Length: 350
Image 1 (cartoon, helix red, strand yellow):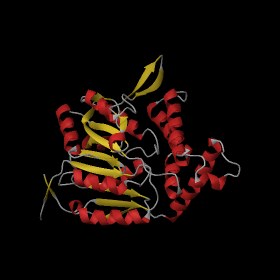
Image 2 (tube, helix red, strand yellow):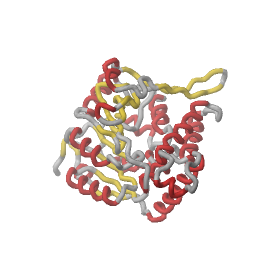
Image 3 (tube, helix red, strand yellow):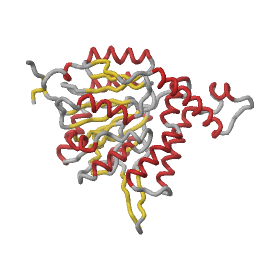
Image 4 (cartoon, rainbow, N blue to C red):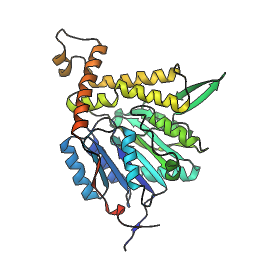
């Protein structure tokens, strides 16, 4: 029986909160990821036209494509990918990449190099947001920890260089240990990942990256920041139609509160922890991007007398999104493998 060469990483691509740049980012990923590639792409509820493009690309480029007709929470999508490759040979590293992450040449090799040289359990690149010369720093090796004072536990998080222009800030950065990664892009050692898998699907919108980071660090390993690699997050268009409904569903009040409650439970944090309150506020702030400005066509259809307060707009948007999501669930079957690549069927020469 024939064999194929062994890749050093499985790359898992999962949906974040929009599909606008999905094909652009996928083509870039294929261009910048060296052969032999082992990519598992999870498509959760994309529009029919995009689903057809993804299937054609999966067949042409021979990567695994899983499809759900209903939108998926991020950790559910990642677990589907991990389940697909569980039975066969798994490379020593697993990379998680969001469907709106734009990588650069050599991204995977340089992240692995950092991991091998430092012994890190996970490596995170410099994450920026936006296009070309306007891009700004999204996350640059942030830190997170649970501290205890007088028997009271509290969560603490920090983000150096947040929202600064990438240049000249990048020139001041160096490879270093950090306490936080994001799922926009992270490389994780597969054995340690499997030891804490499956990823917690009780965290549908917030804190799933922190939860996995804490679980990995409990094993005594380190997370490292590698600024020599930059990956750019490209926000999508989310202010109309199903794109808005998906975004509002993704950041809904119910999902945000459930995530915070589950994280508190997992790490024994008090209800009064101020960082948890800030995460709820962050989720609401994210959701509000879907209905700005207030006088969008959506708002004009639901309001008679000019501008409504944000709280009412928010309630209308979430009600509309809940109805849309229930229709999706009712019309959807179970997730399925749309394209099964050759590397899932062929033994790997290790």
